[in-house]
Length: 247
Image (cartoon, rainbow, N blue to C red; front, side):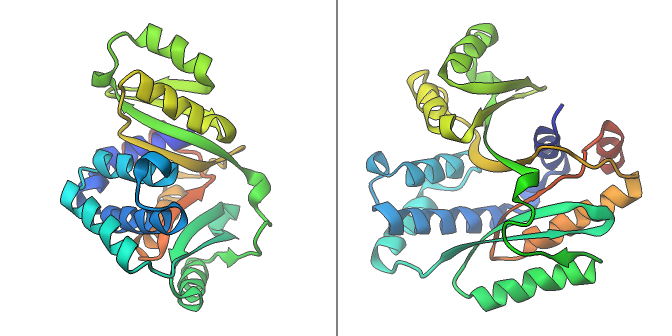
């Protein structure tokens, strides 16, 4: 099982979707705001907004919250900028962090402080991009799929690179350039994903001792608790032993 899927499973097991619901809603609202700012408020003509609305549904965000975010973005478009950070944590673990911010100085300061306090180093942009490949990751509740074998054949034809069949969810991985085609195929199949995102997947992972790995995941939590952070990616190998230790 690959690292990105295991981390998704860990978050589900830990109840992070419930405990950090306000953080998740805040990130979705920011994504809606940027999407409206870029291409307008009509999801039919705005793929980024359509994806943000889909992810809002997957996170059980109330429809009125979504509409309120779209209306607010139309009237008062926020000055949000997309910025990324790359650096190393303890034990040479690579981090790639995506942010949406209205104050770049604040965000740089906050991210640098976390790296410094936890024994890491903030690097220059582009210094670690070779470690991560950008992939489409789509999570689908298994209850939405009537025939798993037929589903796999159709979704592979549409451009899926990998399909992981977990307990209650199916994880589909695509190349970045095929992400839109696979999402369109799912729409044609009347399958609504729980979550669909472009993620940065490590092309090689680091296996750490349990306590070392737990410190890295605690560092991930610190980054994710920052209001400006949208996504945090790392290259720690999420082993079965680590999953058991987190339960």
